[in-house]
Image (cartoon, rainbow, N blue to C red; front, side, top):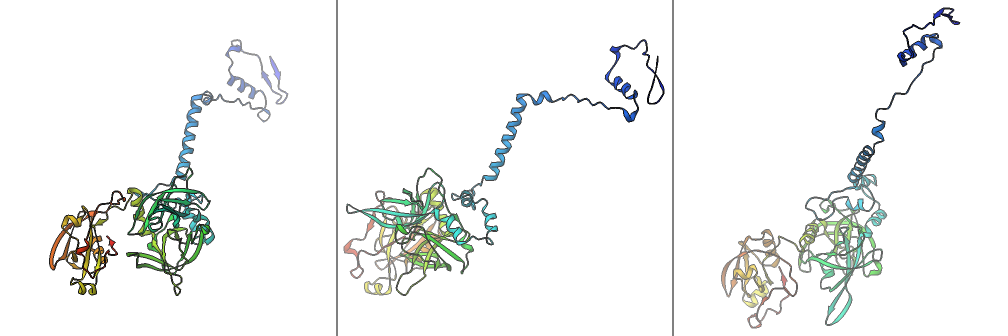
Length: 453
């Protein structure tokens, strides 16, 4: 049978072959036959979707659980990497930039670089640091009476868990210490440890929420003429959070304060009673000093002094970690400098008069006696207590220090095995061998104004 093609006017054989059956047809054969049945420019192309091989895999609950777990792990790792700031190994104080990150300022270095050439404006410094500066009010028991505000001062929060640094003279002798934050929260503080030599003390307060804290700077990089900001509690608690502004007037200023030789920063930022223990800051909002003292008088103005933070940092770290300053040697005696005038009046050599000896100390074990006059240490002539302290501080715990003393006109050489200085409470304080009244030279006043070392 032939059928006429209306398009090409050709006849197409449409008679099926006898052996062809419907069961022998396949999709490819049909498509080929269909395409040949019409001209190519008028033919239609039929597309069939290919079967999805992994459709069953995607619908599997096991596959979905595995994928969701991997995505969750990746997100957690990303968040942890972005926000985690590890602390410096062996350092109990926060790492650089951690205070600013905790305060919500993001990365400190990027912020400081983008802000005013590496420094903030004064209002920004105050806004950032003032919440970490606290007021300290102490109560003391004296003769059965409680004296409120016997000593008051300032303090600086160093860690979010409530460690505060202040001056030792602020809390010395206090039976109760109360810390007041700038937000008005009153918290009773405990003493972690204190150090009379450097006039530093560390307190601890407990709080349910993380506390704002200050960033530590590097006082060794300071230059005279740099701006300095002081925040503290001058005069009374009502003036808490006072900001004063000045400049670094001098660095490495060696001074004797309350009989102690100290290296200080000098500033003309106003420092008043009550500022002791407060913060001295640079324009990057970093703590560069602990405000400690000022010169007073009608003819004195603009002479404030602060403990450099590089000097204070190892003391603070040791107190937080151990409760006292470790590795510091002690001789175990106290005495008075014998000047030339006192020496001539009492027929004594110039040196240091031994007035008392601590029990079981290096001095007692070496045979030092009350009434001896120390005239030399490690072969060097000494005439003052400060000279003995300088020689002592060169040594480490367990080392031997030689000492020459004048005992009733005879020179005696002694060898002291230096011990570590450890804090003692009043109940645990060792007995002190005092000089009897009848053995005191008549021209030397008794009791002496001792300076222990």
